[in-house]
Length: 289
Picture (cartoon, rainbow, N blue to C red):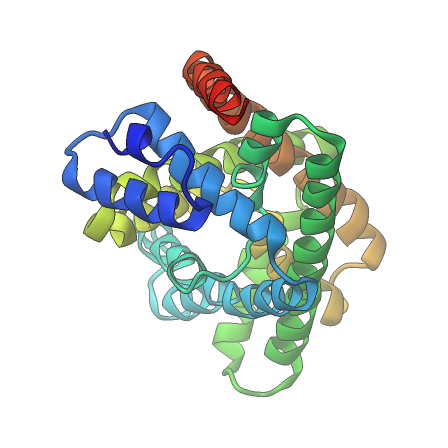
């Protein structure tokens, strides 16, 4: 097995070897998936801060497609029950661009750097996770504010499309704190599950991203980055205040997404491979001695 041959090798080389193993196995086991994501998380934790920020800012801009495409579709569809099913498919476009383009998205980072933290359980790794989260979230939010302002005031879209943007965006701040929090828990859980699945999907990755993110939209769940485009659109058009954004959307959604990704996916999925991880660490420690 690749895991036996590469325990002492370079982390990036080991991750490449594991990815090759995944591609050759119809159903790779949980340990292999864990190691692929953990080693990828290690790489992210070592990235330069500016590179992380620029990638996160780009993701904040790109995720606007999750409002633009549904808005354009909605403006051309009749007022029927099935119209939402069709228009909500457009929500996946922004995620396809961000995930396949390897841009930094906060909700992906509720699992990728957490696995190295659970593996190392060190203060140093914990501080690196906080650094990564701070940089990525800041870049994401600034990117969404910039693109929401552009959507509202550039004149690039016709009035019917702008009306559709406003109607879609209203849902971001339409619920109470705890309702938004629960919606965000489910969204964080689903996006983190998507990240866990991706190494095993190979060429089917776009379909997995499409399905999981379409379900987030169809169920009207709350996503901290995609939803920020919507909430900021309301703020810059005067339909909501920054207080509405902060208290009705940002805070409950951030807490919910983080809990859903970290607790429901990272920790639980780590739990199923923890004995094997500890055994591997023990063997590596004996070899080092």
